[in-house]
Image 1 (tube, rainbow, N blue to C red):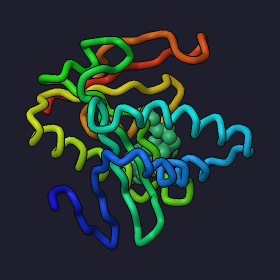
Image 2: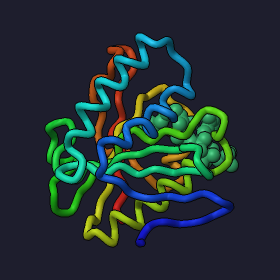
Image 3: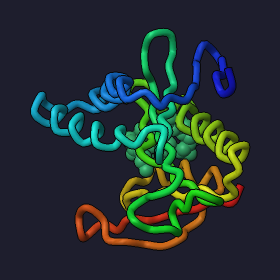
Length: 169
Ligand SMILES: CC(C)(COP(=O)(O)OP(=O)(O)OC[C@H]1O[C@@H](n2cnc3c(N)ncnc32)[C@H](O)[C@@H]1OP(=O)(O)O)[C@@H](O)C(=O)NCCC(=O)NCCS
């Protein structure tokens, strides 16, 4: 089974099974939020996971039975922008999350590196991603991995830009 890596009891694997939304929610709920907020987040993620196997692959990092990290790869369409994913050479990394109590252990970095290997083996030569301009931790992580600025867009809050980054593999 390719891409199932065991490292210090961690397993990283890919999935195109929408029923694994519970694993996504396990990580999402580690950030807090009341029942109403979590229900809203789940409904949104459900709409994303409809694309699994077609335009999206879900990647899950677990430690034993616990899900500790999640990330998605969009292969064809991302934010309606062919610069971000084009189904040929460029794919888009989406919603990287490490569970709150597992952060700063190098897991985000490890997942991104595994994802890059997967993308390269799959024939992609460029990865892109979007990050809020005030997300200093994530920006530091991506800078460490060699991502550079592609372009800027309006963020969810107009005062905070969204930076699109890229890395040629
Ligand atoms: C951003 C996130 C994925 C990082 O995952 P992580 O596993 O904690 O990151 P790592 O431990 O692999 O960090 C690797 C390096 O990135 C940088 N970094 C990561 N988080 C950081 C933070 N909060 N503050 C400053 N630097 C940070 C550091 O340089 C770090 O190396 P160091 O720990 O040796 O200093 C995680 O904080 C997270 O899930 N945040 C909430 C969701 C999110 O913002 N996702 C990004 C969407 S674009």
